[in-house]
Length: 331
Image (cartoon, rainbow, N blue to C red):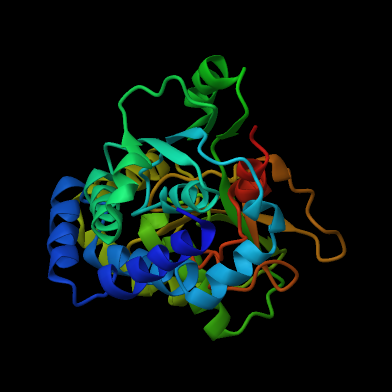
């Protein structure tokens, strides 16, 4: 299967199979929600829409591969082991897409949290071209691969290093995102920031979990903007987290702000619990010293625009590591 054929098959996946009117897809979404209560129908719709319109857009795909002229002559047919995450719907799709576009075989370990949707995508590709049945192999234990891409936590990364370290590899650890505010943001920008925070319950590495604000910052407009996500408290798993974090704050007599469904607390850690957003103050005359080793995105007027973190393009590689470049150089 040559590069042009692979591209055309992914065009078809976007146009036909990921069509929101596809009844098979609708059924898979229902099953995915039953399997994983974090995968709200609207969050699944959002993820599918982004893949269809951003990743599988014909122009975007062609522009993407044109930046890698070596693909037409790169070694192909290698086995690439992929350990997928499952924190948000179809989060492993970009690695699968990159591996297949590079002309390799994807040996995939699906996350137990996201088997339904990923399995549906794999079966859709098999229907488009049965040759994909030999190019996408599912395994519980990844062995005898030529290279590995593994996404997990700081804890699992040590195991990945142990098992995959002697092979070409990309190993991803815990990451999160932050926002740098100057206090001059419009209400519309704050509404978009709320999306960056709370889409997917805030469980993605591109979700903003900490904000830096100038001293004497007025939180009221931000709290108002965040209230649109108070409905998440109606979901049992989220509410359990919210109630627990609220109880901890009250027992520790720690100051907090509450939108009625989201908690804001002053905390130096960029990692926040579900239902909680951390904030830190900074002096307007000095830019905060940010440890970027744990940060996926920095949102703000001098960083990624508000409302964009959950709309990554094909070139927005996790951790800034160019996956397609990596895959094109495996020999």
